[in-house]
Length: 432
Ligand SMILES: *Cc1c(COP(=O)(O)O)cnc(C)c1O
Picture 1 (cartoon, rainbow, N blue to C red):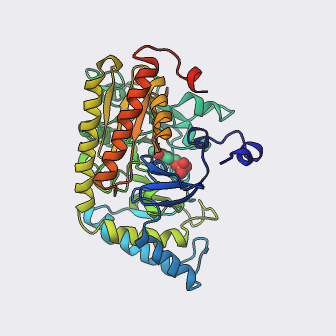
Picture 2 (tube, rainbow, N blue to C red):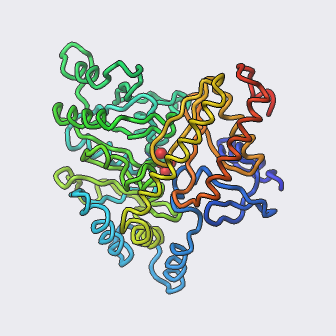
Picture 3 (cartoon, rainbow, N blue to C red):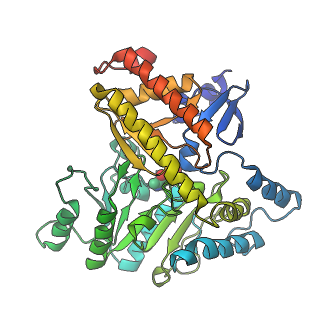
């Protein structure tokens, strides 16, 4: 199984293939299969694009039927039957039951497209340039999104100054005893602070890429109140945590907040097809027709699977309950591991089925991920130093596969500990 073609032809920028160096060909449910049919259990879910697993048969069939019937594939942002069905379903099953009055904007098909649209619109609404972002935030790779992203390595790729944003401390950034909302409030209120009033704050409820930093519900409520008080919009980036990853459809529902603009992408098509939404309160939907556009805004094939996914998974709270239950199971398991190896000073964090374990020795997480892959489990790392092992299996995983994956994590961690104990010996030297 050679990676020669990728090494010779594909750009050096390729990333995940380096961590998971096999050629994949087939996928079904929670398994990916390499060309030689070796199965790999998926605890990564395409970074939460595959919340309902790979190639769900009840999503695939309507897609195949749609294509076979010669129905429209690409239509820019013209009206199509597939879009009509999606909009009706999204309003009836997601927006209305939650009392969300938001209009649906289709930006380009990726998460960063949704964020760019949100930032542009917030600036237009408030007539101000600055956006408030947070430490360890991740919002995408285009320049606007990158300017509100924390990671220094990612930011350095911009090649120009990233401006018109101010990074503020996220919940618990300075530990449990420091009130970061009070700090921000003071800076915004004080005419001598040197901080310009932003048009909006953009926030994630759980910073997945940033190391699974979980915002307290009370912190989110106080952030919302702060935005109201200072006449700023609240943009909630639910691209990775939305679509059930934390239990409810939106990750902010449990906090009881009502963001002005909501960014969705990743699992919204339900099938791994590119689709993104920017949800906007009607009073802020002040775009001129075509003022923000793009060729691939709302793709019909993605609408077909997205509509079906809403019907399959969001008619009742069964999936949400399952996520709560399995999330607790994963958390309990990781807590057990942290207790078994106190010398690792591991910290377990997460909400719902976004759970992780952070290691004092940052290299530990990468070693566990590498070892797990040798045992046919795909599991990623996150955090500014890659210090967090991030477990995010498909929400639909059954308990047998979940246990199997957790057992591999145990095995991989035991091997990683054996390799370099609790000390800080650089692991890369061993594996590269
Ligand atoms: C993945 C992600 C994005 C960017 O989405 P892309 O499709 O990669 O552009 C933005 N915000 C969050 C929270 C994400 O997880």
